[in-house]
Image 1: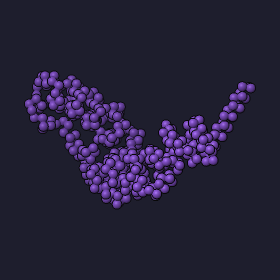
Image 2: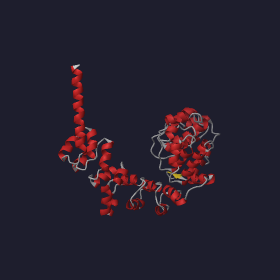
Image 3: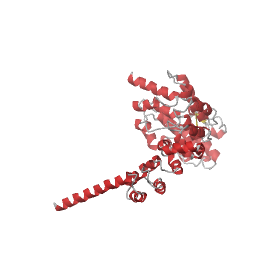
Image 4: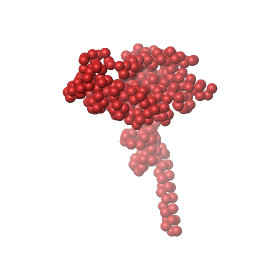
Amino acid sequence: MMLLTLLTMTMEAKFSNLLKLQKQAVDENTPSDRLVEIARISTELARFVAANLNAPISLLRELSNSKDIATRQNIAANPKTPIDVLFYLGSEFPEQLLNNPSFSLFLLDNPNLATQIPLETLRSIVRYKVVPFCLIDRAVNQLDKETLLALAENPETSKEVLQKLIQSRYASVAEAAKLHVNLAGEITEISQEETIEAIWNSEMNGQKLGDFLEQLSKINALPESFIKSFSNDRTAVYILEDLAKYNHVLLCQTLANNPNTPAGILQDLAKDNYRGVRQNVAKNPNTPIEVLEILLSDCCESVRKFAIARYLAENPEKLSVVLNHYPLEYSAPCFSRLILLMCPQFPIKLVEKFSSLVWLERYAIAQHPHTSPDMLKLLVNDSNRIVRAAAKARIYRIYR
C-alpha cells in the first residue's frame, strides 16, 4: 500500500512538473536561455518552444533541422524565424510559409525577394490556393517544367497567367493551361469526342498516348522494320536457337521480337541488360506468362507498360498479380500506371491515394467505378475541365 502511494505521488509530481515546463515553453516572457534548456528536454517540449516568439534565432535554426515534423512546422509558422530558414522549410510547409506574417512583410519590404526563393519551395508554393502575385510572376517566368505544371494545374490560377502558360515550351504545361477551367470554361455535359481527342493527343514524358495505343494494337504483329530472313515468323526454330548463342544487342532484339522464338530463349532474353531487348520480350505473343510476371516489375517504364498490357489482356482476372509486382510508389507519372488506374478492378484504397499533377491520372480516378463520393467531390473542383466533367458525371450516376 505504501509503495502504491509512493508511486502515485511520484507520478503526480512528474505530471505537475511537465505542466510547469509546458507553460514556460509557450510563455513569451520565459527567458531565451531557459527556452533553450526546455527545448532540449524532450521533443514534445521542443514543439512548444518552436512556436514561441521569444525563442532565440540560433535555437530556431537548430530546431528547423529537427526530425520531428510538428517542430519543423511550428518553426515555419513562427514570425521570428529568419527568412532563409523560412525558404528552407517552405518546400515542406508552404501553407505555414504563406500565412507567416513575417514572410508577407519581407515581400512588401523587398519585392525582389521572390527571386531568391529556392526552386523546391517555389514548386510547393504554387500548388497552394492563394499565392502572392509576385510569386506567380516569378513562377511563370521559370524554365522549370514541374513549377510551370504545378501552376497550370492550380484551380485558382488566373486567365492572364494561363494565357502565358499556353506558350510554354513544354507540351504538358501548354496542354494543362488550355484545358484549365478558368480558360476553357466548364463543360456542361461531358463530350466523349472531346475526351477521346484530348486523351489521344496528350503527352507524357514526350510520348503521345495515341502513338502508344497504336503500338499496343500491333503487339501481336511482326514489325515491318525486321524484314531480314531470320526475323520473320517463318524462320526455323533451330536457326533461332543457334542465333541465341551470340550476345549481340541488335540480334537479341530481333530474337526477342520474333514470334517463333522458343519460350526458353525468351526467358533468358528477359534478363538482358538492354531495355530494348526486354521490351521486345514483353511484346512477344510467345512470351510465357511467368516471364511476363517478372517483367511487371521491370525497372524500365517502356518494358513495364507492354508487360502489363499483355498480361492483363490475357489474364484480366489477375490484376492482383500485377499489383504484387508493380512498383506502386514509382514517382513519375507513366502509361503503365495509367493502365492500372483505368482498370475497374483496381483497388479503391489505392485509387484514392493517388494525387497527380498529370490530368490523365486524375481523369482515370474520376471515371473509376469505385471512386468514393468524397473523392469525386474534390475532383469536381479540379483545374482540368475534362476531369471535372467526368467527376460530375460519376456523381450524377451515383445520386440519380
